[in-house]
Image 1 (cartoon, helix red, strand yellow):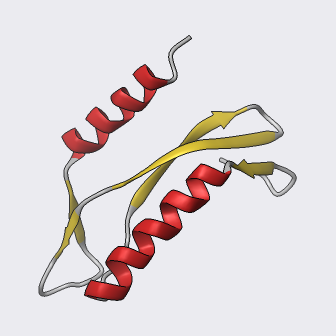
Image 2 (cartoon, rainbow, N blue to C red):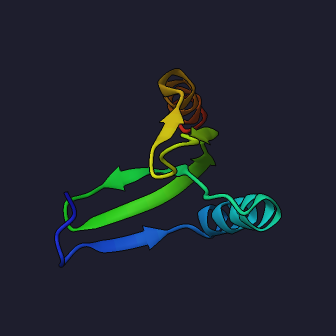
Length: 86
């Protein structure tokens, strides 16, 4: 959990990726966007260094309910970890 005194640093590539995805999906399909932010929590600061979009489906009867593929998300997190391995 992030406290009120936490500093959040968002890398420019993350901002570019999020805005690009939002403009492509939201404006053309008038849908919401869902994604994952990845980074490190260093106690007093959070460093957001990567992100990816998550495909999802909305429940046709209850639009606030969305269905996401947990395996897809876990696989993408693992790929991102491998890309940043020392």
